[in-house]
Length: 226
Length: 305
Image (cartoon, rainbow over all chains, first blue to last red; front, side):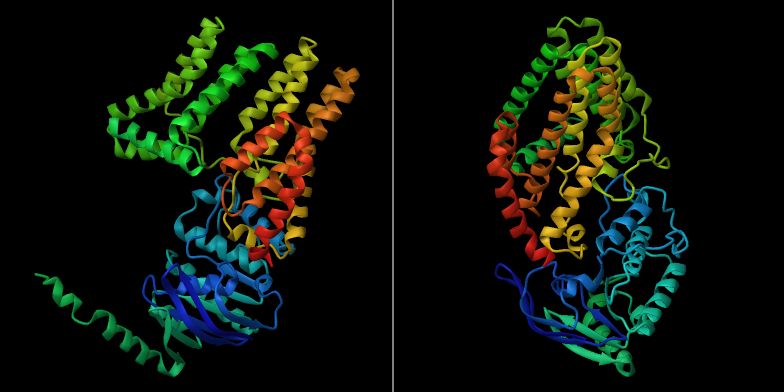
């Protein structure tokens, strides 16, 4: 279980997150939605300990960061490092062997090629495979579906279901509502640095309708499309 | 085309500013360092002209990186593209050509210029599908990436070592070992993102120990062939060889600690000056190493603790 109390983050006078209070349980999948710049990535980084912040994060895992597998929105790869070496690097960091990497290469990535030559989606899949090989207890996935082909999206959805079954905590963000509908038990809507709404599975439709109404409004009419 | 070179100039100026130097001072420092290096090489090393010329050409090979060449091809027409490639290759080797001419190495200077222009015409792109094998795959990333990026320098050092054996010149052999040790040290100049430090389930002390152990192990592995050859052919210089290796490892330690002492920022001017001074005055390391260690632990704590 992870308990977040009064979490706030500001860059100078610009407040990004204010008074965030959330609870994440084992065996549950949580979605965080919000517009670009709403603070999702900052929240994830604060939770992971990659950003300093005010407030309290309590967990049975100590230190929590050593149990988190964090998939960044835009994973960084050095030039001249192969996919397999990247997996090895992340496994070494958590002192796990990674086992037979070729067998665990569920996305059929060309692991012997330089990761910098991969497409956006392939990079995302490599970074995801790496944190899965680490065998973490908590998974924070920042836009795992972004740039990934439809077949791999299906695999990612199944992986998230498997993680839930293994009693892991999964927190993810996505700009595609249907992916959250397929995976999440609860969705939190982050707006202007605050959690504006939290809904469980039975109210996902109403959240989507609310977001649609708020986001679209009369914007399309303003375009005066002809 | 003029705007392209103006942009390159602005990018270089920014590098100097990030390093904490006014661009004019930066260019001046570059000229002084290059002149000093050239003088040292021609004064101390046999066949320096060849080493010097190959060094210039190896820098050009970095400009032939596929992504970079592809970008230029995409944005400039064929004529402009060829002009840019030819001009930038010539500009990069120009200091080397001047150095060669000053030392009356006319033929090699002409050869370097011709090779630089040929390289721009041939549009050599590195084959991205070919992965250069490395013995360092077990513990990525510094040696893995460094080895692949700089393998021509290792080949060059091997050539220098061969020349040292052929002409029975121990100093040249020791120089080749020094090049390899400096190369290993340079692998730790690249600052990784915070994420690639954060992933480690280690305390700051354990993390530094891990990095240092790997660096020492791989430095020893990379210099081993050179050390063996030197010990076989220049047995009388065993003491110098051990001293050079020892110094190389100590500087390696200082570089790693120095890198993380200012992490996540890149190497800055005061740190660079301290390191450079320690090369001329090694006893300074007795103060620098504990200072860098204490700072590194402090800098890593928020990321790893």
